[in-house]
Amino acid sequence: MTLAVSLPTSDADPFGHAVLEDPIPFHAALRAAGPVVHLTRYDVHAFARYEQVHAALRDWQGFQSAAGVGLANFRVEKPWRPPSLLLEADPPHHDAPRRVLQKILGPRALRKLREGWTADAEALVEEVLTEHGPEFDAVTRLAEVFPLRVFPDAVGIPAAGRENLLPYGDHLFNAFGPPNDLVEKGASRIGELSAWTNAQCARDVLAPAGFGADIWAAADRGEITREQAPLVVRSLLSAGVDTTVHGLSAVLYAFASNPDQWVRLRAEPGAARVAFDEAVRWESPVQTFFRTTTRDIEVGGHVIPDGHKVLLFLGAANRDPERWGSRADEFDLGRDPSGHVGFGMGLHQCVGQHVARLEAESLLTALARRVAAIDLAGPAVRHHNNTLRAWESMPVRVTPA
Ligand code: OVV
Image (cartoon, rainbow, N blue to C red):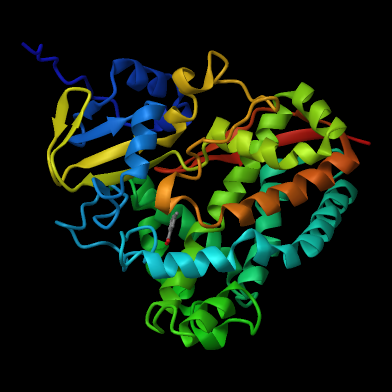
């Protein structure tokens, strides 16, 4: 005889301002409730434990992406923009664009960027210290500035209009959630922002050298079609800016609120890369993605029916004590963060993660050279987004080395 266990439910709103301000207690409650929880407000199932999140990310056949990785089900609703050939696709369609980007953004290809980005980071840190002195906003002066200085140049888009990149990404990541106030707030500008973003993906707009030109060259070689090329460029402009800005904010906040860890990094500058991954685990700049079941799937004694949306709480999995131990909530350079799901897992795992790590490593290394201590100089203010865990502002005070 099997004992029927009722499906745990939650009527909380994961996309409401209370949870977005501080999702940590909500995540703990979801993990405690069970391996799968029904979110009554949106009639979706949720995984918040590492084991189930990790397994669902790896099972692309059972948990598809092609029906959209937001709340909207593309089997039923028309997507607000043409779907991404990477994020919102599954094998076999997903594979050629993935292979192309993986090579262009891979560690070998990035080697030629390292020297320049290191110098750019050193110049930025010097500039901030000279222009603003020891007190400045780490979000608006560092985390937003550095990616916008190096990444659009690496893609090869023109200088004009780059201020559109962050608002475009902010709306895109809001649009994965329900049509709430955050989506409404971006709605009036998204036509104009999309038109600009799409226009940057054309071959004749892109610089002759860069990730964008590399994508078009792959189309010339027949690795993807010429119809696919602009959409692959669009993925870079969609996924490559806000994510790294908030990733850098996360690591800066981690250090500003854990001064002992900054001391440790300065003693061991080679730890910058792992420090960034630990911050991605700890803050999970991308908090959630949905999948859609392709058949009835049994989890923890409950059946999720075919065609249902499942919300994967990457941020909750990344602090699951079952996986990370009783100090999961601590930012700790002594931890091995590998296996975190902040970049996803499996065949959709962030294709730009090496770019993000190089940006973080460049900036942290430059800061560690020049700054002996970094502390919060006032309360940091959250930026609410349906998908991203972000900061609006972060006043810091640094002690030059
Ligand atoms: C991972 C991610 C986020 C947002 C957009 C895309 C990817 C894209 O491919 O457009």
